[in-house]
Length: 141
Length: 140
Image (tube, rainbow over all chains, first blue to last red; front, side, top):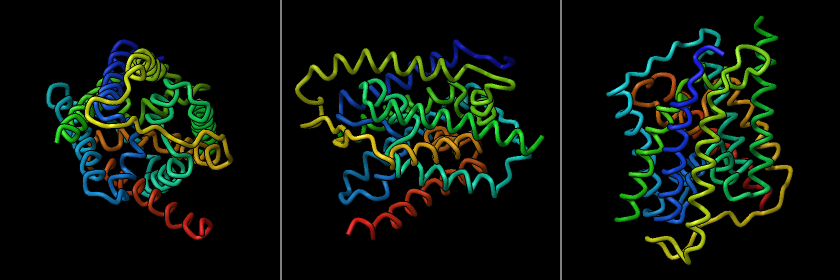
């Protein structure tokens, strides 16, 4: 239980929730990042692309601003090579596209709307993530 | 224009929230999923904080006829639980557990963790486009 940060994490979560609420209240859109990334590439109209690109630019800007005030240092894991990052990223891309969402769209927005699909999707990716971390540990140790 | 500015502001808040919450750190994500080892339950507080906030806000928002800057709420029309949902979510969870990134944090950490997160973001985009290409023939 080292590095346990309940307060910062809860506050961060509340900010994420406020962001998702703003996007729904003002624009009527779900703050699902995988869907927004996908739509930024695949939407047919320029406007549909633009608001998604603006959201993604904000996402990058938010990380940038936070890091200016509170520098983030991440200790890289040697076991996670570039090849593994690519395999993981492609798997995430295929999975979120096939499953219509990720942690934000299903886990936050969908669960908050009591969507059965999102509740099941969230339970599924959490269990799958837990099993994967467990299997990686067994293989590496 | 208003819709683009509101999307930008929502994105900014989302990015700050992800950074503050610790989700941009893949080690923290992996430790959260490592329930049999060095478990760090912090990310439960992220999900909890976000879900509680949106559940309360959505209750209020959905009493409105329409969003402030749009004519409709754009909600998913698909309500059926199918194999694609479960297989897709299983794959997503596997990738998430393998590298500790999910799409939001990968994008949000581009400015301070460029090398790794750009590889992840490009691979995620490649995966999305690959799935789009693969699913096309079966639809026709």
